[in-house]
Amino acid sequence: MKKTTLILILILSSLFCFGQKAHLKPAREFENYEGVLKEYYDNVFPLLYQNYSEKPIARYTSMPSFSNEYSFSIETIEDRNYVVSNKLSTNYWYSKNKKNVKLISNKTKLTKNLYQKIIELFKLLDEQTKKPEDELIGFDGTTYYFATTDKNEKVKIGETWSPNKESQLGKLVSICDEIFSLGNGENISQNKIVKNIEKIITELK
Image (cartoon, rainbow, N blue to C red; front, side, top):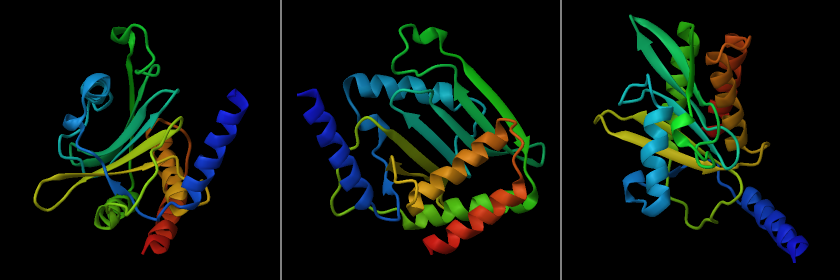
């Protein structure tokens, strides 16, 4: 029975990946959730988004099913542009004592070129975000959120669920993970990230 269920999951996951469109879908309003999911979102986001502006220029969030939640936000601090990378010390959902979940936060100064490219990318993502005609519900994977603030000062959030790594959205996630790692202090070339962003922008357009 378990083997049959696993096979079904793999088949559905494969179908979902192949059927994915090269755009995000609008994220559901988190306040509209109920029960344990609402409790989770009401608590995990304030913790994960510490040191972030309420109106994000560009904010990326990874919500894995079983590993630590993490995110980055592009922030201007004392007239300098940074990527601020936040990560929880353990997965909040499965933590038995949620008061013991800590925030790990680091930041890295961005070059002007990378800062501008990230803004350009997230603006494009917002423009292309649309409700799908049909969709499968994701399970046992990772949900990714991409947030920015439009010209009317409204925070817009698009999401995708466990995209195929070779798809455009999969490449987008990979780039955002690189930006997160940069903010987390890893030795990653900012020029390389710029080139990767330029490439994905061309593909998305």
